Every structure is written in structure tokens, then in C-alpha cells.
Amino acid sequence: MGSGDNKVLVLADDFTGANDAGVSLAETGMRAEVAFTACYQGEAQALILNSDSRAQPASEAASHITHLLQAVLPHFHPRWTVKKIDSTLRGNLGAELEATMRALNCAVAVLAPAFPAAGRVTRRGQCYV
Image (cartoon, rainbow, N blue to C red):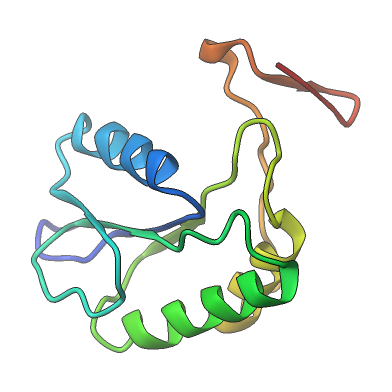
């Protein structure tokens, strides 16, 4: 990927998750920035948006994700979009993932609810913390 490309868009449902993603991407050498609105106009290679939607009802969270993507995609063109989820599966995982896929016209998504370095693993469909 060329250095001029906008590479990664991360949608996190809370501030802590947004910052965790930003730090992880910055540690790879990417210019990562966490934003609170989709009006972002910077030069980041990795843009992390905090939707603050974890505690919202599922329909509101999905609508919020849709609006964020509609606002950011005209001026930020990611090669990859990541819908970050909570490692303990809190929040509106299904509603937000479905809204993300619809907004991106995406037929396939990979759901990976695990963080082995922090002791969070998934075995046979069960999340262990």
C-alpha cells in the first residue's frame, strides 16, 4: 500500500476501544487519529471513529453507524474497514455489523471475538474472559 493511501477505517463503539485501536495501529508505523465525528479532514492513514454507541438501543446504534459511514466515506477512502467489537461481546454487535455491511455494500464479514494476549479466547462459539 502506498503511503498516500487512506488505508484503514475503524469504527469503535466506545472511547477506550477507539484509543486501543489507534495505539495498536500507530505502533505499526501508521499515522493514526481518533475522531469523535465524521467531519474529520486530516491526513491519517488510519482513522478511528468513536461512535459511542455501545449503550444505545440496537436500532439507534445501527442508525448511528450508518450515518457515520455516509458522512466519512465521501472524503476518506479506506482499503480496509474494521468494526471493532468489545472483547467481552458487550454492545450491539449484530446490529452494528449489519449496518456496516449494508453501508459498505459488503457481502462478507469476518467476526473475530478474541484477544488471546489478554486471556480472551473463543472456543466452540463460547467467549472466555
